[in-house]
Length: 247
RNA sequence: UUUUAUACACCGGU
Image 1 (cartoon, rainbow, N blue to C red):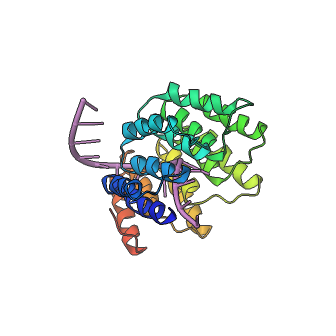
Image 2 (cartoon, rainbow, N blue to C red):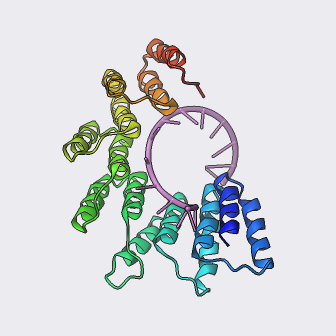
């Protein structure tokens, strides 16, 4: 079964969900029954292939089996619901997970997904409150959850709030990573402060992080969308000089 | 051992 699971996963995580499903069928044809991990891998295969509705249908089928979903299952389902804009349903699942007698409870991934969801649907205040709820429920944040919060503020140009989360990361003994810096950079780019964006970019380098193609793109965008076209082009050169392939 | 969360741009679809 592990062999099949690995094979399905190999197909699915490379975006090849059709192939993943073929292997899945082959597995049952050969008398090997899927387990919870198989189901999660299949859901994940649909998710990676952008087949969110198919994932939800599969989840419905799964409910008719003896295999109970776990937190990972529900996390994938929430992810798909958010992609489809079905925020209410995502919240329903989240709330049901938070009930005391629930079979599986939210973990750090669940909370991060919900923070991201509120960011996507523009309810930024809720990002912060979900983060606070998470802490109150004894779930320690990690760099990804912090980044989700910075990203939420950044996507709305709320640089002051983004910066305060960035500082909080350090105060709590974590180290901001490339995503943290790039998100903060975006917060400035989207609030018409390209020079501040550049400062963050340079700070990232000084702290021994290698900006990746996303970071460079973000800086180019910070300049470009604020009318500083020659600076934007200069970044492209800087990028080549630093050995980062433009995309 | 295998499954889930966060950053940019562009393009296409509804």
